[in-house]
Amino acid sequence: MRDPELLEIYLKLAGDTRNAADDAVLLARLAELAREMPTEPGSDHLNCGPMADALHAIAHSPVLFPIAISAWLSSEEDVPLGKALLHQVSVAHLSQIYPQPYDLAGVDEQQAVIAARRLCALAAAPAVSLGWALSLAHQFSQSALVAGALPDLLDYHVFELPSSTHKLLASNESVFQELDASITTLDRLDQQDADLNALPHLQEFEMTADMRLIFSTLKRSEHREIHRKADDRSILGLIARRINLKYGGHPVVEVRGKAGSTETTMEMFSHELSIELPLSEGTDPVLGNMKRNRLWKGGGA
Image (cartoon, rainbow, N blue to C red; front, side):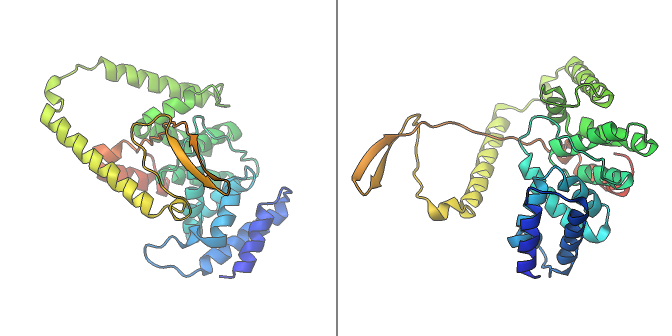
């Protein structure tokens, strides 16, 4: 790996001016460098250093990302690089409330379909995988290849990510509101919710008070372990002083400066982010894994 060359590629990819021929050369060279990088079991070597900077620039570029992800996920030798790029873009769109639209005009149709299937198989952020599927339906509306793949892609979102998919499609910020695929999928989800709500409610299947107590204790321990690991890996923890506040909406904090110590009031806000896992992860992980493998290989969900 040559860091100076990677740094130069990153600076060109992060630039404001775009040239299709130059971009193709840069992305091809980046893939070559990624293949040459030594790998270690369990290491995330492609999301470190200048390579991570280059992938970050691609993930935030509406021009570069569709070209890069479709080429890398459809090439077996470049799949690791595609997965690293997918991590970057999923983080960027994790909390997005509308499907991300993509311009696929410069993308090979077959590669775009393969990428769409593999985005679902890799459990990309719903805004990314659903946005890519709807962009396919919009960009290649007359394509038989896309027409054959679209039901599998939408079925994945309807059955595996129903809540996230409904929220994304129903968003007023979605540019796909008038798209037939979006309208029919939203109708399917509404009907699915109506059918579920019409089912009889059996109290015998509810958790008892003791079971709820045990469950809440387990979840509390799980959350504490997650926060502990996050604190251990936090970069902010190395450069900032931590203050534990309890039951304070407007705590007073002492601030020390050259002029002495002063007190300032801080207003506290709550923030949370929930992520919907594929439904099969909780109901039948083995079958869910088989479904994602079929999607990866080009089969249905």
